[in-house]
Image 1 (cartoon, rainbow, N blue to C red):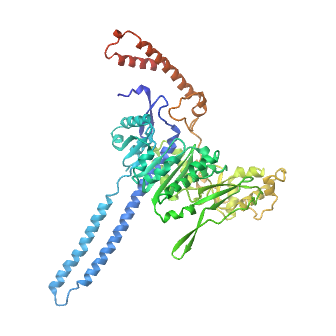
Image 2: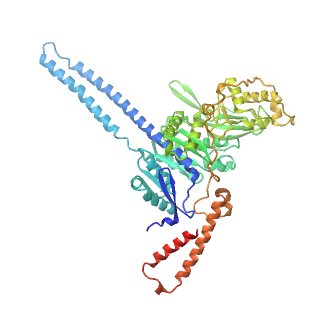
Image 3: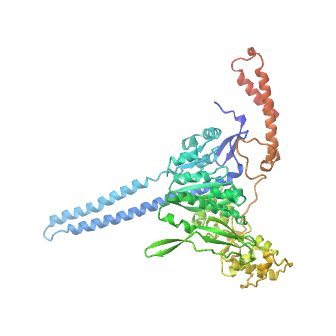
Length: 594
């Protein structure tokens, strides 16, 4: 069956082109170009890193085999030392010695070269492919990539994906394959079979995590997106707990907490199979969170998981929060003893404002980025600027991430601190200077332009704000107000607001853009494929898009009525080949009226 291009719109992104039907049959969101570009950047870095690790492993093996060869040679030389009177034996032994040295070395070299050829191109699984645009971009743009397997359980999506594979030519046909199947069943039936697994569902990825962590090869990369941000950010805490096993809190840091909840959930699923994860990049962009983690197998390393998880105590009156580790470890002789965490880390009432605490978690409290990876990805993006449609956005995000404190979970909001005290807010540079002058570290957050990451305790933070209020008086407040309770105490630390050279990051000092506006209106989530677009979707699509779609529907309905009238005409008026002519004429008429 030939494809009538008049029914489709050609969408080009990167080096791939896809045909999208004018009806909402297969899901596509233009805003996800940021997601796809970031994934391609990480995938390129992964391929380079994977090759480096393989060569390092081979080099280590070659050195160890060389030591064994030298040991064997030395032992053989001692056993076959020539006698004083035996020249022939000496000559024979000399020849034998050369043979024992060259033979094993040549064999080791041959083994090294054969092992070197064993590294195959990475196989990629896109578990929820829809139109197949992501799979096609992987195949066409990522150098050194292997087979890309695109799955979907929707026949319309698989049909669209196969159509787009053919539309993109021979390279895509040879590298990308599409299957109609349940992604969970496919991943469970292919354990440790894929070097890269990409999960980008419409909503929560929770039902795919158990099978995904089993399908990734050792040292492989799992890329996972979650778009159910209302759930992850605390709007429905009980739903979040049922899906991810963590209870969210409504703090200014809720989007970073969403990242850490997703990482903790993936780790939990991996632990069931004696596996664990190592995050390389975790991003909150637009309306979703996206994490990139490597998956390894080790029963001993898996025991460290409780050390990477923490519960969060959030005061309901002020911005104070505290973390309590789920577990701890103690060295014992040549081993390690694992014990439950010691708590509680906070009293019943907040020591700053006297209010109660809400408890959330557990969340991933270990680093969510690998700074070496982040710098490598950022350098790779900058070196291939023309190949990323969303270069400005992903470069800005990666730049901000590269300057984050890696070992500080969550962050404070400067405006929220000021709102608690009902005072004017100090500038970010002044507040950072005060923290640095107090001998603590501070950085921004890629999640929030006003976010401040610091290892300073809350006592120091509130002392800085108390000193600020003394220099910038406020109106009297109710004595029971949390801000009044905080300000009623004298600061134990005198803040120094003198400008510090480190108050601005390198990107800020160079005036590099870090937080960019959306490139166009209605840049956000779109409705699920298959749903009828109505006037209630104006907030997602905009008036022009909704009105245009409704007008097209009215025209299509009119065309269908005309076709029904034509079918009622006498049979002798219809000759062989005429249906094609009539269909072509109808299409041309429709094009001229639109």
